[in-house]
Length: 249
Image (tube, rainbow, N blue to C red; front, side, top):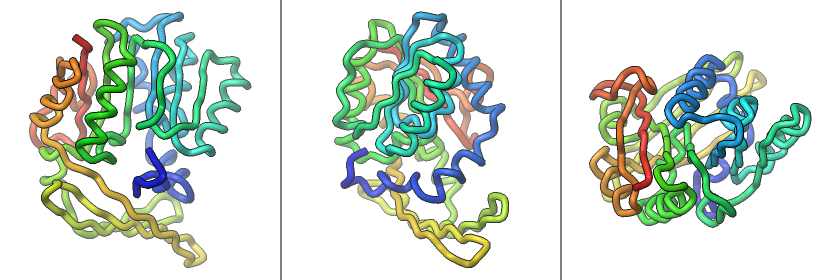
């Protein structure tokens, strides 16, 4: 993400550690096993992990001998991944870059973007990103992403105010729903045990399944399946998360 994108700094500060703590290791393990099976990944195959965060998927895949390029805009994440890759001697390259400006230097068997990140972008930006992903894929390569902010999910799950607790920390999440473009603008208040507060603002742009299928098809990318549990349960209305399996034509 670029510095002009309001979401670009949402994941630094306190949320960096909150995000790590709310993703169970079992989910990363299940996602990794699915990705390996879906794309027939073996040592020597290559994966591009866009907006990789602290590298949970990138590291897990690299531990299987798969070459991974991990890209994120936050130095703290990238430095952490580099340290792990060096320590474990993984075939894992971590790069700090604005994902919209990043230019892959090779093609990949698989591109992943797991964690709702695609909803950070307006339509023109998302279209640009899909073009970049299409160019980065080998023929018949796959692009797999997850989201919980497609229209079919977000409208049902939307709440204007929620309180959540992670360990001893709590955070207040306030949201407003807007149309044209369809989006949820939110403010998160992260409250420490000493009463100090960190405030972050963000936007999730909402796209329906049909809109995403059309945007992807314009870049020679075809949606093959949508799951709520990858490889096991197809997505239906009411599910809280969707995994899109996309193939380059």
